[in-house]
Length: 207
Ligand code: GRF
Image (cartoon, rainbow, N blue to C red; front, side):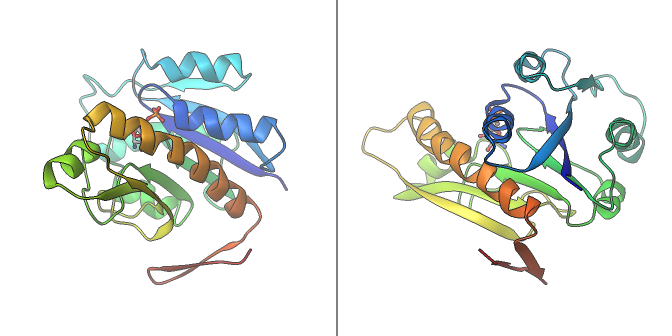
């Protein structure tokens, strides 16, 4: 069966777009079933619709329940579109909420995230600014499995990006983003072809 994909976004959706375009272009054998946003105003929602992908909005702002209750609504949207824990894949693409333990356990090793730093450096928010402020010569991006921590799961792929003299948060972010758009679709393709093997924390790519 073709891998069924659910993508979770909160904003711009450029990583989502890079994955959807790679699927359209035949570079990834997967079926994008739904894009879910916690933010009703996420520009990525419009991009998904233009590309013919169903969308669901589950506003998190003002939601009074627990994290697990919120996540269950996300899971329901995924189920409704056939992205199941046994054989689906959930890609976080700029999804600005922590996923709770219950959801992580349900989709065990079937949730991916992209982070704009060379993890484990600069976890959390504003990773590019953290890198600049720290003074590193190189930063980059990381695609990893999602575990119950924030940006702590097993690393699948990384790309290195130089920090240049005079870089601003914007210029460094743009340089990193280019690499994000290159490696995230690649990892989804490898996942779809069952080429990613996980042993404890270490990942082997079988390509
Ligand atoms: C990207 O930099 C990604 O690494 C981070 O959030 C940003 C999302 O951008 N997790 P976009 O919504 O994919 O354009």
